[in-house]
Image (cartoon, rainbow, N blue to C red):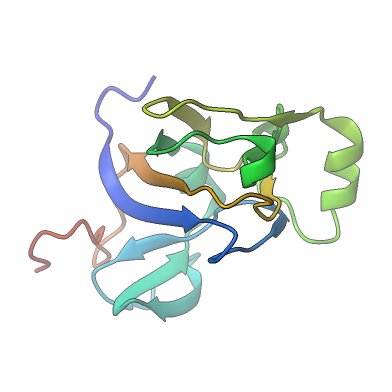
Length: 162
């Protein structure tokens, strides 16, 4: 699918009824880069956990995969991830367009056992509800890309940035 892909970002989730949240339908549209650079098409700059993040042009996101490794069971009662099947085919979806996509795609609850992997296209619309039980729902998401960013941007992968 992406033979030259490499990991470019890692995000850890630790949801329980003590550390709990709900997230409405959205797309993950940010990448982590070594430093902020003025490059056409790269916008919405922010700094999170000391790292620079931005939203790249849609073709970068369309070629990315997110791999989710489940460290605990993901059940409806623990706020399992829900996706809209086929929603990645709509490309970048604005807030005004989300309801239209929701009306045209089937929601799927992604139940998982400990150790299960889930692979999804980066632009898949997804959400999660709060946990209703005193059980952890930990997961690690690793984003993969085969793309090279335009100079002077570089992926922030934890290795030394130039």
